[in-house]
Image (cartoon, rainbow, N blue to C red; front, side, top):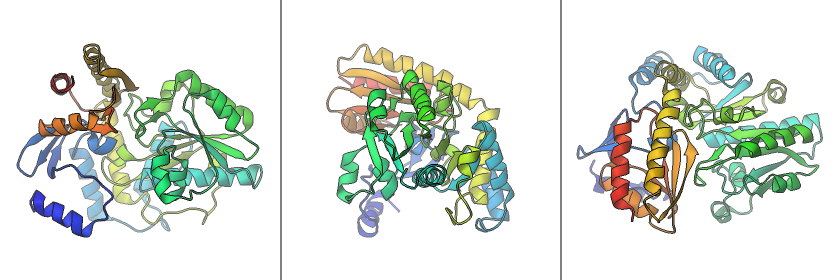
Length: 395
């Protein structure tokens, strides 16, 4: 099926929820993608931060295929070994906790919201259900996670939003403290805001939020759907801050392209859920859990988390060097291999389109931010090639 026919199918049979770019990708391997004409691209987006160990990593593909040939699905009415092993691995990596598996980041965040409210209603007060989140945040597209999201333009078409969420500026502890009331049960933050433009929590700020939650008896929910699984040069971005959340959410890179989400909650909080309180038909199925276990093995055996830190620092230095030569570039933000280039007003979408034309997959957030989320296997030569393109493309 050629691109013209795909476009026709898209217009006739799909809901118009995506503004797709005019490329049909047919194959991927490592850091590379190929379209239907055979043209090769260097991927600096990883399917929106998903294929952290690279496209079609053989160990992940083999693990998923082997499990698919043996048992694909039985539902969560029964025990399966891959799910049990993955829960144990993630619990250890996160520093203890109990797991719930879902199919996406939005589902994981929805589960975290439900768990926080269930815990608080039981442990404190039935009216203690409010959650404070940040402006520019993005937590998902279900109605509750959309209400948690701090982007009014995404909410407005679907008003009225479910109640119970208050938004404050990121890195403003005074505003956060003022927003907490007797009806607040949790604070929910992305360690680095991804879809909002790659804005990190300040180190002192996030530590102070942890202390504030402890002081006020609130839960700290950290949304690591995009930052987790090695992206920032640590298994979880909260490790950079020397603290732990009460509830952690994961998705995207966990199974390297297969749909999975996870909620990790400390023991007493996790105990608030009883059988029947929450569930998922497909969440934590044996195929995706087998793939996720392989991802964790590859991250360790190939030292990809350490590589993300080292290569990410090199990438940052190259971007900062570029920014130093261009008046239109304002700053570089992020950590590890989750980076953004802030531009002056306008131009980001055109640069992303020109990059695609020249064989680089990058992402524009609005008209003034370029975002880079390459596989953790990206090399310095590939980064140098992108910098050479950006140097020519940016005035």
